[in-house]
Amino acid sequence: MALWAALALPALAIAGRWTLTPADYGFGHAIKQSGDWAAWLLLATLAVTPARLALGTRPFTRWLGIRRRDLGVASFAYAALHTAIYLADKAGIVAILAEARGVDLLTGWLALVLFAPLAITSNDRSVRALKRRWKGLHRLVYPAAVLVFVHWALTAFDPRTAYGHIAILAAIETVRIALQYRQRVT
Image (cartoon, rainbow, N blue to C red; front, side, top):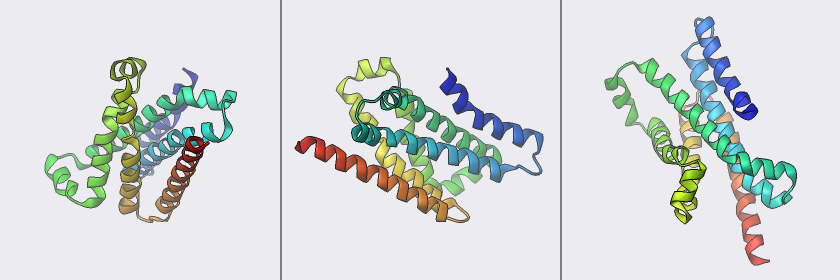
């Protein structure tokens, strides 16, 4: 419960600032910060496996493993908030559909579509029901993550921050793949 309270704090801050000071903290800040939190939590979620492979079963890595689904669902919740802010700003299906054709926004929509079944099935009941298929389904996180960061790079006013996060994603995945390969070989 404490983790979820902590994960909700940035959303409350975004909503509070947008409500209390809309002139100073408008659409641009709200959409950027919600997207940032979605991406940061996604990176944290993806970093759990390499951390566990590198550090073994320590109390902190066990805690991360147990909470990985919470981090992933929180990432999806911030992505949904990001999307809701975008939809509220556009306030019309015509404007949304016109922009959705561009690669910059299409990558975001595709990422959201890939993340939705992951968020829906991030619970013990789904793990039991889907059995081995659950892990296969949740491997969609990797192409979805690539789409998220491409979306960020294409929509940012200054894409250098997005490029830095793409480098972090690449590092996380390189370490994960190398450690999994090493584990299989030994």
